[in-house]
Length: 131
Image (cartoon, rainbow, N blue to C red; front, side, top):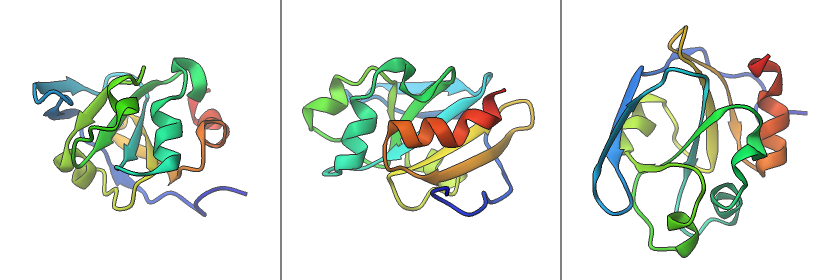
């Protein structure tokens, strides 16, 4: 059983830009497989992602993205990079956090996606794509 029946085949951006939680410009490139996790304010499942250890999702780069910043303390203390970028969420066609997409930079594509229930579930669902 998966959190989503089948991923939608679609391109992924090669670069991203947004703001840090303190309002500074953040930009980067997707050069390794990257797990992008969309979060929102006042969301228990999102809190579990933000507080997860660095290796909770396996051997994959992580990026946590939100359309708006939050003052909830676990956002600022997250061990994962947090970026505020409504544009990136639109480019990835992520509509309802908490949600994840796994980007393959070699193909510039979203290779899998799903609804987030917790770090262990996400790790299991993406594992086959990281081999």
